[in-house]
Image 1 (cartoon, rainbow, N blue to C red):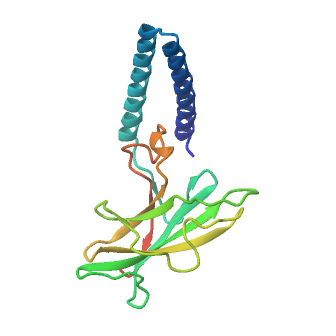
Image 2: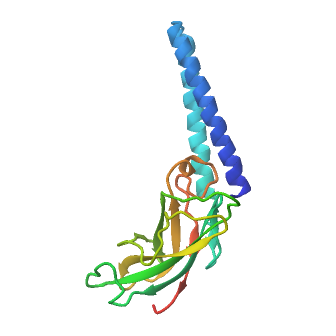
Image 3: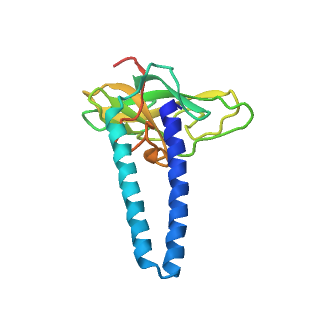
Length: 209
């Protein structure tokens, strides 16, 4: 996690606490019949939300996209992923059907854990394959082999995940994008998954294209 993302997380937590306290204050004012005061507090809260949204979007649009080299890891706390490789699938290995004008690619992602004691898993994690034009593709079928992105992983362990994707025959993949669930990342200022920000690209080594 970058320093900016850490600061953004702290700001989000502070904002959530501020919102809860302000909401409780609004309830108390309403119960006491102090409508003018409650309206001013509500307007202030609305202005705060608008300013936060403007900062969130503004930072997301200004920050450059992060691009990692093959096997360079992107970490979400102690859970990490790295793009490894992609290759066209042989007919016998294809787990999903390719329509005319398309081709199936098998992309490998390495999952690892920096945790010291606990076992963990990322139930919301999924990989999207991105081509040279920037278009993203969801997996067309279940992962090949013994592991999936959401599998449990122990301290210091790692495993490879191979997922199939259907791309147009003219397209060539350049990397994978890891989604780790929408919340709370979409609301964190400076986070890779914040609203309107380009998510980190994990480049892959392409073979047989």
